[in-house]
Length: 178
Image 1 (cartoon, rainbow, N blue to C red):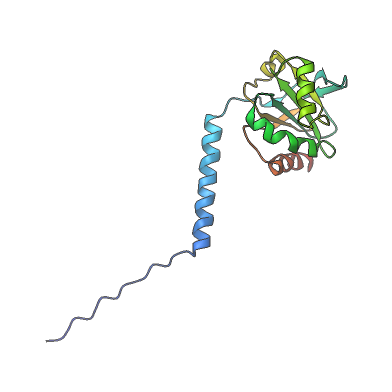
Image 2: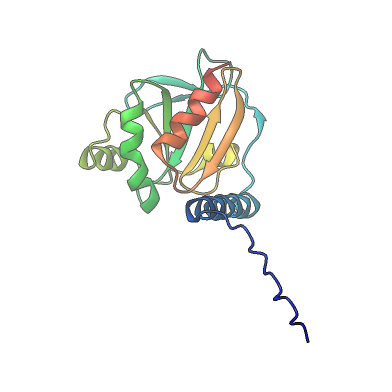
């Protein structure tokens, strides 16, 4: 009697470990961004008419409207934990980019100035919004919120929560390349 040949097992080709990890990481990041976008607050989109506001230093700045360069407007609060992490990054960007910050419901001007001095944040242009009226007019209800304006006064990007300094710089670069 002839023996039946042994079945040959075909080995599946597997991706190298680094490729699997890269692919899994990209899927995880995509899922995280999708959930964040789905659960995030409704932020303003499109054109925002220019609003002239005054910083704590008495300088007049315009939020929205036509500008010479892209800008980021950051809504933060003295009681916001994430904001404490992100504010020093913004100080590093003030010389290179148009950055405007809004202290939302953080007390009177003296309280905000004291907070800025204690945390070495005096270089930031800060608009005080003690009642949250400015934030409400722009549809902002959480801190931190980042609104990225193009030179035509359109909100081109927006995000809430923790972000990185490179994420901020990349968005501003993207808006300025056109």
